[in-house]
Image 1 (cartoon, rainbow, N blue to C red):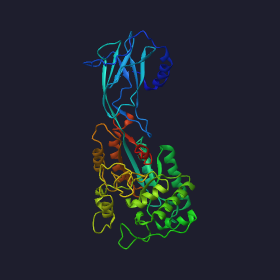
Image 2 (cartoon, rainbow, N blue to C red):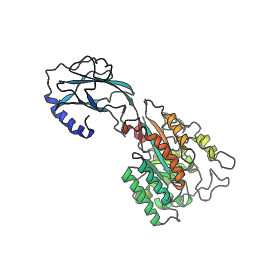
Image 3 (cartoon, rainbow, N blue to C red):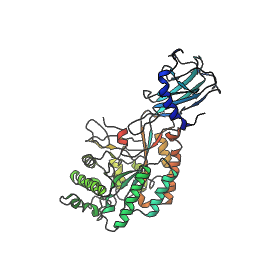
Image 4 (cartoon, helix red, strand yellow):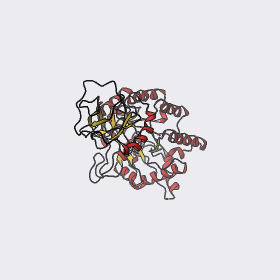
Length: 446
């Protein structure tokens, strides 16, 4: 069998030889040969896949099958048939046969591939493969607090070390840069860490807002406009309000005020070298239509506040405030298998012709605070039964860096270990790790 490292030079040679192929052989038959009773061991085939992922604007997928056949001495030509397509001739070079088969036109489904030599009516190998859309696994972090401990940063470093294809979308809070208890030296440390995550692992830096007053009070100064009054109600936790602003609903702010909060966050991030964020999650998942319109106005492309509320039953109870009840009411139809959509301007839970231009990506796996490993795996399996996918599917899980400890890290690590068994890169399934903003390129607004 040829090593994959030799394939690129071989296909370059194939292209060079294509114009001087032997025309004395009969053209490939439009009708495929019959399948063999068993694979002919005289032939070795590289490039066969179990999963051929349908490409999109984010991931190239496997829209081309690059096949290399080592055949017995004296073999004149080799043809391939894929699905119901006509035969295609492989190019011969130094006794090796190769071809790049374009399967872009193949929709999701299960297909048979046959290879035959020298016009034989029986193939020397038949191979079935799944043509599938990706299963995107989006892992997010919610910066609820202004600071994150060195221990939590190290645990996140370890996640990357243990899961080589992991991508994280860090929803960073702007209050890191306005909270007076965080020193400039500490801010520099956190920024350096985030920039390292982006440069080393291609992580995304998004935005998370709990409307702390230390941030809201600075919005006017940052933008050079009139100050915004910090709301202390309605709190999702405290009946008498929250003087810090932390637990106040994002949707308690007008569309104009929240747009300015987003623009101020953008300015702070740009100043620190973090770049303009384009993905968002509201603190407490408290996004409503006015919040979505603010996101659109500020140039955001994706939100992930639609919450699988039933999985956060820990917050259900008379002493736990209104967080559970608020999410149950506002995200009533969101569950384990909810998928991305563009919310209507009239109803945040449905899409329609009158849609807001921000993709809503449901937080269907929510955060490790609320779901144990078995639940994360349960939700993953609810979204994928092991078969091919007729459309792209999203599965979202995450954590809070502020309380990310060894126990929570172990919880999500075991879930990611399960996910990693089905990576498309290993030809083991349709799983691809994704960044939140990229999902707007997969689920495009029509």
